[in-house]
Image (cartoon, rainbow, N blue to C red; front, side, top):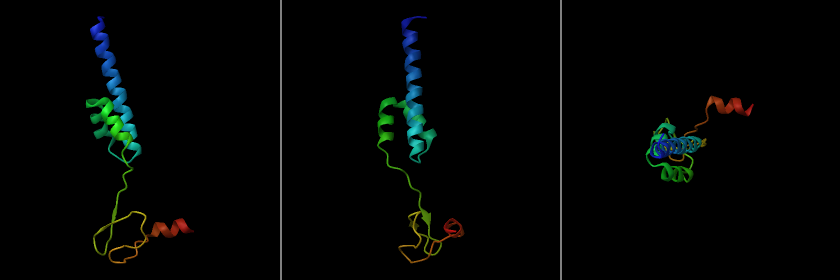
Length: 94
């Protein structure tokens, strides 16, 4: 094996390691691991740094009364005042 081939294989392995680390970091923050794996494979160091500084993704829930997006932890819609308490909230309180 020539040194050129060895360096190419090493570069490929390092790119895959960076891609896996980027995907894991993004997944821990609620982002798509597949998309970030591709980004980590194409831009190995840069994508990992960006993924490290991502804020945690919080999905919103929709108010059934006014159809606006509200905080997932909210119990009352801040727009219309609708109570968003579900059956699961009552079970958790018991």
